[in-house]
Picture 1 (cartoon, rainbow, N blue to C red):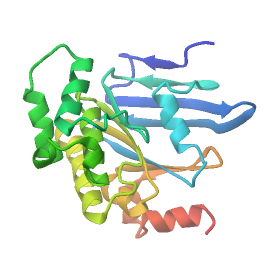
Picture 2 (cartoon, rainbow, N blue to C red):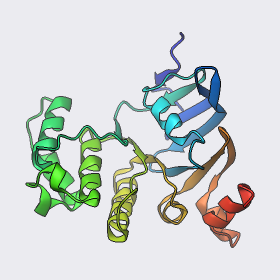
Picture 3 (cartoon, one colour):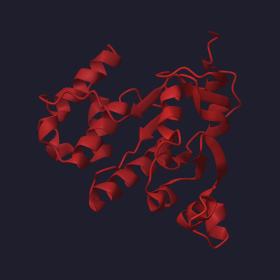
Picture 4 (cartoon, rainbow, N blue to C red):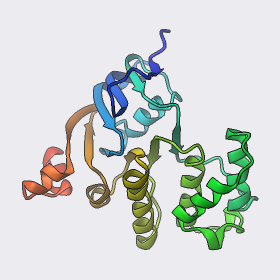
Length: 239
């Protein structure tokens, strides 16, 4: 099979991720049908849609965990971080031990300077010596985001980053995501069912229905039209 996923230094300037005419399927059944979109440097984009519409399938394919049937994915960086449903975090280790362990898998650099910078960004200093298995869902998610940031990613992919987290935890994680984009220029592609959350932190959105892009737009444009992302979503989905 011809390789469909490329790390390319020749992509259009400022475009971190470009998906072109992507088709993905299982067995004989296509799940994603010829979708195309771009993610620019420092931009936060949400993949939206009902369960089973192909959001997670799309991000798994971008991460080369699945192979596309057709189309191509151009990634203009080799520094990629991600948080998926199965985290890989070691439950018996503390946050500090986990982050140091994964950091040294990534690099031979033994400096802890960036580690402490991460702890500050994530606001988890008082929890770093707690075992991962003892943490609340919100703290676990912060630790997982910390692991995803160990290689200073230019592209960060988050699958339902605030699922199962209380309101305060969701707010704090949203602030972290916005800070990563605005202060560090990190590009973020995330999936979420929380439309208010997407409207609050995202620059743009891609609405999938039946494996196709139904809408691809900017959040500011919706607000300027006097609409909300939720009202647009319901209208587009025929609700």
